[in-house]
Length: 316
Image (cartoon, rainbow, N blue to C red; front, side):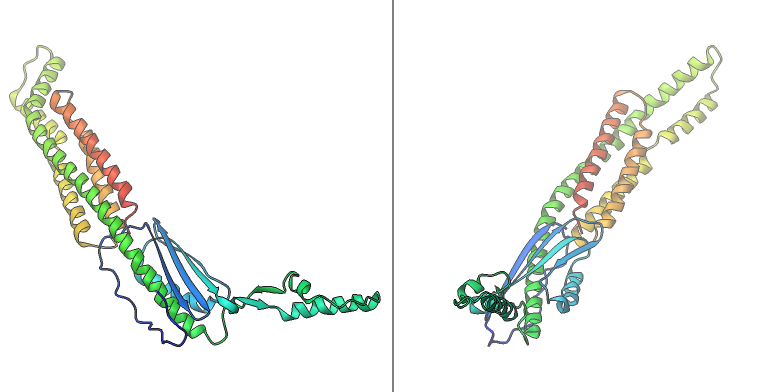
């Protein structure tokens, strides 16, 4: 991006990136060049629970800070952002002579020459090499603050647009990975439902055997046996947990597909999904083949949820 001091600078914002799922990880840079100076803005973003903005600017840029912060807050809700504004003078204007310091050196040299009766004149080239005489010119040229504010705004918007695109691309990869894991969870939940239904007769048989062992030769009351079996079956029934788990998976997929700024909502859904998986494990019936397979699947579901949680930590 370039321009000249004689040409007007448009402060019209560039069209922002389309709304959608965003990662909190990204990097962007934008540049502008005017007559005698150049500007560069860099943004680095990583995940954070809130918007944590660290802004570095040259001396004299303090009047521009509110505008920069406003532009960032309009576009970004969460993340740790390091924003650096680089400003450099170019050409002859980049070098300045501190005349007050040079005059002080000359005055000291003349005083010493008179005091000790020296005939030689002070060497200007040597004085120019002394500390503080030559340095960078003043960062902000007088009368350029208005132009600089327009260029900073333009550069900031361009860098935010680039950051949005990078964060969007990263979110696409995250969405694909999470969607695949959600499909795995849904498939395993269906398998658990089938296994739980298949395990019911074996569970009832095991309960009857256990009661006979406890009662010995006493006759079992069929009605009491049916009652105890119903109570135990209710305690081990996982249909409600599976229904809620499937509902959470559907809500999660819907948020991934249609929403932005959803990281906290996704994290809450994952907590609920993990709760259902834990209950599923606690209700696993027995050590028969079906019970062991349900346990394995529930552990796999928990593992997939944790992997999704790692990805969600990077979602805005």
